[in-house]
Image 1: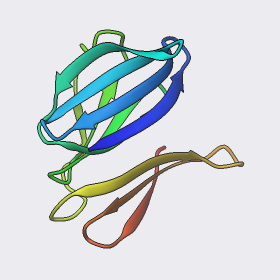
Image 2 (image 1 turned 90 degrees about the vertical axis):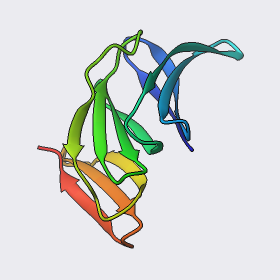
Image 3 (image 1 turned 90 degrees about the horizontal axis):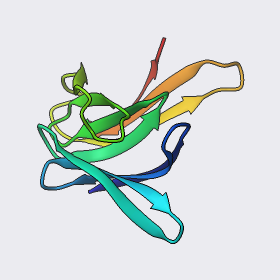
Amino acid sequence: MSIACRLDDKIGELVIAGGSDKTLSLYKVSGDNLQKLWTVDTVAAPRSVDLFKGRFLLGLKNGALIDIPVSSDGSGRQTMVMNSHGDGEVWGLEVVTLPDGSIKLMTSADDNRILCYDVK
């Protein structure tokens, strides 16, 4: 249901995949192959995923935003960032670092709005 490719300083090139089965899976790029590192259960299906400063950010089908610390085994505690964007699904999630150094978190959802948050 969602996928992102990112570079982590400690683990390397990653593929982050959210499944309709309410799971988040992490794969490491190893040559021409993907090596599955772990799969964890989430409270709802991840509809959007991103990686920011050592944390996975997930927009879930139930409208919630959660974060999970990056680890090689998926053992980090899932933290609720926001209970609901609207009454339904979060469709888009992106972390943006602007030229002035400010960091913004942008979301889109079925409420037909794009919201931008100042991370700090």
